[in-house]
Each structure stands twice: as structure tokens, then as C-alpha cells.
Image: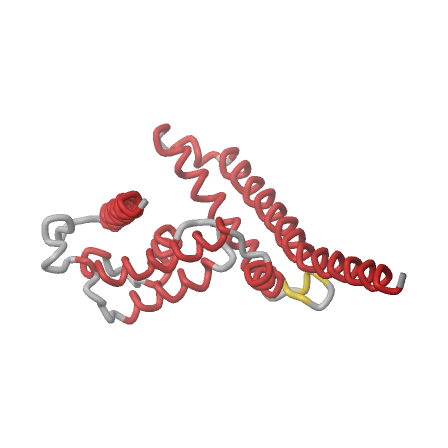
Length: 212
């Protein structure tokens, strides 16, 4: 009888521990839902503004999407160091969610973000430009709380810290001379980086298949 009592006690404690761990995921999900609503409200306001009619029709969807992403990030940044669950800040909860609830999908996402960061560095020839290094660091920091891919986060960070410099100055290496020209726009350089990332994923997929 005593052994059954201990088993029941252990089962209860494990259930409590599991619920405690899952609670962090629930809290971050709630906060991220609020961020999405905040971003959507901003997008609706932008769409209703008179200036929206001046944007070419083919660019309107991209414009609204960029507003959603930016405002989503603004909201998340605003609560990052605020207590949202007992004594835990949103950042604390997000860290707990990663450490305690890391599933296959989450693990693969973390690995992919690291790979993309290394790819961006490699394509630049390990450029030590201060603004470039700052953009890399910002993108890495924001990847913890963002669903955007690393390249998108890097592109946004570069816009903030570049001080008028162009990405063509950073990625205009000898190895990239056929893809990045001195006159290439930042958007064109980002597209090149994305193409290189896709090529990397394809190569890794082929490699994995050959091992099966």
C-alpha cells in the first residue's frame, strides 16, 4: 500500500512539474497573440490612411506586411523586460520555453538561425565593419523573441544602423562579384543572400538523403 502511495505522489509531482513547464509556453503564446493583434491594428490604420492610396497596388501587400512585422517586433520589444508571469519577464518566459520545451521543430529552428548567421558572415568575407557587426548582433538578439527568419531580422537591423551605407559595400567581395555589383540595392543583396541560403538548404537536403 505504501508503494502505491509513493507512486501516486511521484505521478502528481511529475504532473505539476509538467504543467509548470508548459505554463511558460502558454504565457508566451498569449503575449505573441497580443502582439499579432497590435500589429494588425497598425496595418489596418495604415491601410485607412490617405497616403496608402499613393502606394502602387503591386506593393501594397508588401507594405502592409512590413508594417505588421515591424509593429509585432515593437510590441515584443516593449514587453521584453516587463513581468508578464509571476516574477518572470517575457524574455524569461521565452528562455524557459526554449530550455524546457525544446521539441524537434524548435531545435531545428534554432539550428537554422545559427546556420543563417554563419552564412551571412561568410558571404561578407567576415567583414568587420562596425555597423555590419552591430546589425548581426541585433538580428541574433531579436531571433530569440521573433518568428521571422534571421535574414529578415538582419535586413531590418541593417536599415536601423547602416548610417547610409549600402550592403553592396559589405558583400561586394571577390567571391560574390558575379552576384553583387557596386550598384546593387540593399533589397537585391538580401535576395542574393536568400538564394544562397536556399542553395545551402538544398545541398544539405541532398546530403541527408544520400545518407539514408
